Image 1: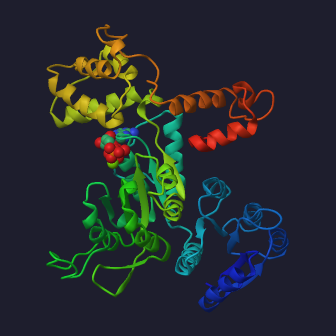
Image 2: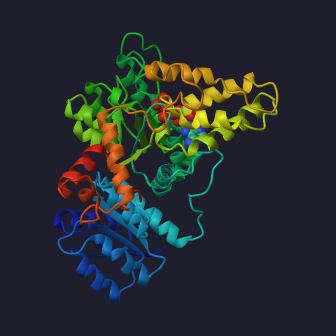
Image 3: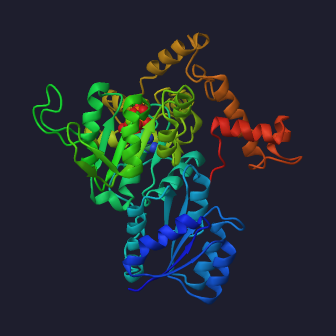
Length: 459
Ligand SMILES: Nc1ncnc2c1ncn2[C@@H]1O[C@H](COP(=O)(O)OP(=O)(O)OP(=O)(O)O)[C@@H](O)[C@H]1O
Ligand SMILES: [Mg+2]
């Protein structure tokens, strides 16, 4: 198919390069240097593939997308932008972008993106990737969880690195697997590596592999996780634990898609989508110079934050019922209902170990239950609450767990307070009825605090 491609890029060097790279592939090429010129062009000519930059001198490149679709609803839209602009990515996808390339652009990514575009145009019936897969379900109906799931659906099909943050047991790995299973890579492997669980001296060879004799003890050749994950997804768990000296090599594979096995000069090329996770604060590590900022930006192209369970208590009854069913089936029991006082206690408990702690507790509860009514070991909750807060010791069921989130840190309290104000004002920040006025803050101060605390309006 002799597809017609319009390239919109204001940087002349890059524009020329794009045309040079795509030229030999046999497409009909046109190029302009602004959104205005692109719109004028599209009024006259129908294009099959639009390849556009976002930051252009006049109008934004995003304004071209609807115009292009208006003239050719089947057009394939590829957006190019600098990394770390999640809002742009989300906005672009809402406007109908089909793919997203991060600058600096790897030329082989560009060529394969355009090839995919042209293939899809030739076979428009290719199935979409947003179909349900056979993995464990993600339970949740709270606004915050639905927001997380929406982000997963938006980002999954694209080869964009994702950084998942959240406390222990919030479901980071579950979300990482969902991203893989909803992506075109789902037929290939999902490879996992926990950077904290491997002694730092061995991590390099685990990630990149080694040749026989590369170091004392390297008796056999070893294939690293990056090679195993080729054309699939690599889940870098506890990514904050990657030692500084290994970070340049990781950065290189993310940027150039290449590396060498230890003890080898041969360069391996791989096509790996990286999903990283951490339960710490990577930006803090960056500030402390324990984590390279360029690597952080590469990993954090699309951040997904999973809220702790105590901030989405509406999900607790659903999760309880789901786990009761799961473990009853597994243990051949017929547990059918959860007494109201037990459910109340479960909903009000602070869950420092989040969903994993809840899951483990329900598993034990099902084991302890002789009949149809779930017997919850409430004393366990009472004990751990008493440990956390002595004033609660000895109080009766129903009052032993303080309602509302336990105040972990001042920062967390501030986050909650700002979120409440934002919800109350329907996310209006400025003006007399905005959250800034409500909180007695200047608009810019509030915005700075929101950035600092990672508060974003749900999309
Ligand atoms: N929304 C959910 N619905 C159903 N199960 C969940 C949900 N969230 C978490 N789980 C379950 O809770 C357990 C912990 O989840 P997961 O291992 O993904 O957490 P994590 O954030 O990776 O924890 P850690 O930081 O300790 O590694 C898993 O068994 C997972 O299946
Ligand atoms: Mg995990």
